[in-house]
Length: 254
Image 1 (cartoon, rainbow, N blue to C red):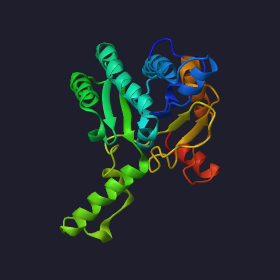
Image 2 (image 1 turned 60 degrees about the vertical axis):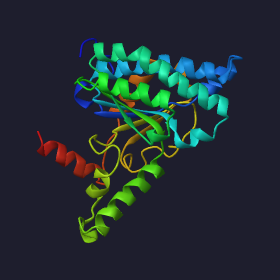
Image 3 (image 1 turned 180 degrees about the vertical axis):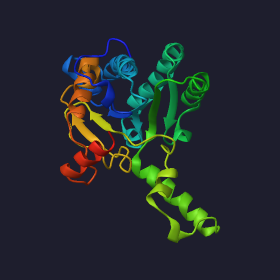
Image 4 (image 1 turned 135 degrees about the vertical axis):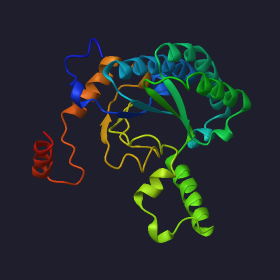
């Protein structure tokens, strides 16, 4: 963890950061470019933020790359986005391996075209041995889809007698989600100026700190990322407790 930014406390780095990467199209439009050019520029930002997250010791980085709602965009834009995913994965995988970054995916990837699916599968396999930062790509993902799938699995287990409905807990639900092996996000960042969570990790962000910025994703820099983390570190996370209880808990753990 060399060259740690001065405004980052190494003892309070969020273990899991989730990002809604918004503003690619508007960034391109403001420059008189086609929307797809914004998505291309956004890939460079992904590389920058992966590096920045690794630098400060983030363990999990979840990126909202393609939602189930995105399937409803104009067909030419959807095709361009999916092709870009293939190109980006093939281009970036060697650097991910070099930097010990493991790739994971969450979402309904069975809907992905064969070319995109196979490229994704190759990258997942190629980085499976890496032990550093884990990057979770949310592809063809929405939280409501995820929760419906979880409800179906729980209902099936209950119907077969493998699960007693009276014993269903919050932990049961969490274990049925696509993020079962990942801790809930400490920090959720959304770029692009909109202050909403857009059907992203609704269960998991129940107590996440939210950070909204007007900066479009292609213009979001490492320094902008560090600024978001620094603001997160300045907040008091109470999880339903009072400030006094949080303070007493912190003192007792010393």
